[in-house]
Length: 334
Image (tube, rainbow, N blue to C red; front, side, top):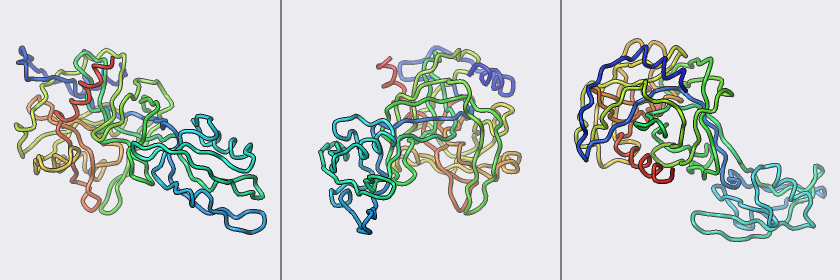
């Protein structure tokens, strides 16, 4: 992380006078760096349930009949805590004809018995499950002391169920070889990069308004900025910070088109990209730009969260004050 902090300060060297903050004022260090993120689920997330054809040609639906459905989380099988898809297959293969699954749905947990179908490939439960996910995002800010970070501005959800993934563990990692597939109407582009590099932070919280964790990096090279309260945010010109070409974080012009306190947290703002250079490079907002900090007049406003499919120049953002609530909660755990 130290390398990208240096790159950011070379390109975005803004002098900010920090005065003694009142009790109500809060400060963070906006970042804008592209990172990889890996998250491992707490249990196995069910993304699909299907009938299975056994060696006699019969359709077996024991798992479906048990009431298990997409979005459920399988915590254990025959008393064995599950950490991977392979472990569930191992239990099914070793079963004596029946498997007891501990299944969580919302806040409720129950045990169900299912009978694997004997197929030509061995016993099958007819379950599609996921134990991890990986992707690209943007670090929104570091805390003033550099001990923690916030990123994305929205939670990491399962692509099949739309549910926020239950977190067991995770990390953010440094990116290299960043490239762009441009956005166009009806086809949202994306940032691509390699991120098998340095582990630069843990993921401790996967919440509706972002991911949060700890990092042991020197943040003094990032400018400290006041967090603008929601009631001070107004329509008008602003900028976002992001790294879309691997050459370091840069500042690009946007327009805040709408501020709404009635919408969901990660859709507080409506923004529009106005920077011609960014539009030429990206076509608008990309997947992977979620978390790009929004700033104005040396103050931190919030972060980009979503893009409009039919108009990728526009998207939603979240007010930074809302993200900071989770940063403060995380600080109490450290």
